[in-house]
Image 1 (spheres, chains in turn green, cyan):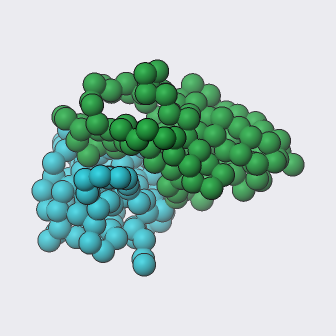
Image 2 (tube, each protein chain N blue to C red):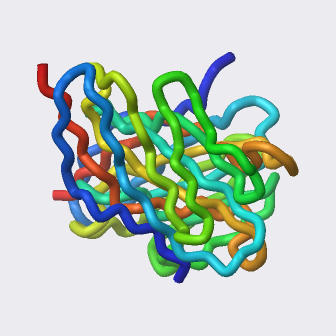
Length: 116
Length: 117
């Protein structure tokens, strides 16, 4: 199975500081996409950011940026200037081509807690 | 624009009873997913539809789970009979599958939290 690994079960950060959430992935696909989703305690999955495997520049969406290192197969999420409302579960996910075309596979998640 | 709508939000049933979940995807989205999320874990795909066709149901426990997507729009997921281990959140998502940037970006409903007692 082409796995997504998030090695940090929980992370803590002080309000207004930056935090990096780690994600590594397995794939044999040439073309694939990487996503980060946020899941607050209310349960909905909120799209944050996307990186395509052929994108040469790291994706950014407001305070979110994705540190994409293709050779290392890592796609870490960086949240700058953390806010209390950022406290949630964060999931890294991959969609691939080939036999897994269109299949969105998730990691186990990282719980982020932002302290005031 | 309305998002993905799921109902019910919560369901408590006794084991061995049947249960059904309903999902209305975003208008025009051709791809629909059902995921199961156990507590503290990431969502796991149960089934994926492209229009009316189930293109990936390899992780759907077919002895007790069934799904359908009528006319390529709404979908229902059924469990019969339910077991204690089926307690989880069932998430529906939809996407407009296009080539190019952000293909397969999935939009999720709020989920149905199932408790089997």
